[in-house]
Length: 211
Image 1 (cartoon, one colour):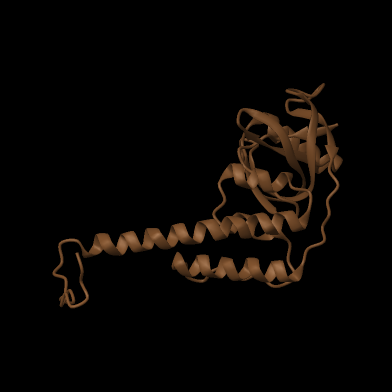
Image 2: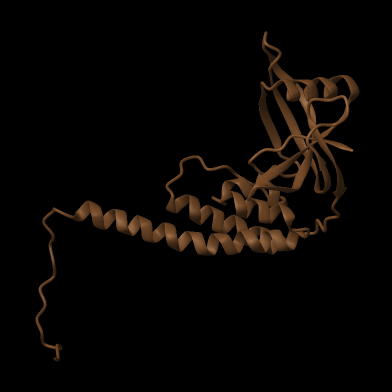
């Protein structure tokens, strides 16, 4: 049985997750994590459903508040699929469920990692992002997944992929679609800026023109 803390976000294995805890049920959960050493799951609430999520462990409590709330830092561990869900565990305020932890093929290909980083760099140039995050090879896809402009449903799809090769290819495919869109938006912005300004056009001489 795993305690569950559903959220409208995707947490990946190895990801650092800061949380502000203010509800009584989750204050109790954090207290149990501290006193009993339990972990809990963060299933993604999407399309009004709970199915996949990531187990997290409490790393530290950054700050405590007089009302019992706290700021905590957790660390993503294993991906799971929910098999049964209970809105409230016996004797507890928080939810829980039976989960199945999913096996993963973590082998990636360095060439794909290089291609992914190259496309990320191109995206950041197009977005004119100053001081973009740096990634060193080898890395895992989860480390960059929140950095390439995925929508929530795309991040969730990535979470469900059980092969690192699939995840790398998915992210590369996303960037190959996204980069031309960003370029076109930049071109449109430049055209809009030019509206209302005097333009210097090259005159046509019509020598090679045919009707």
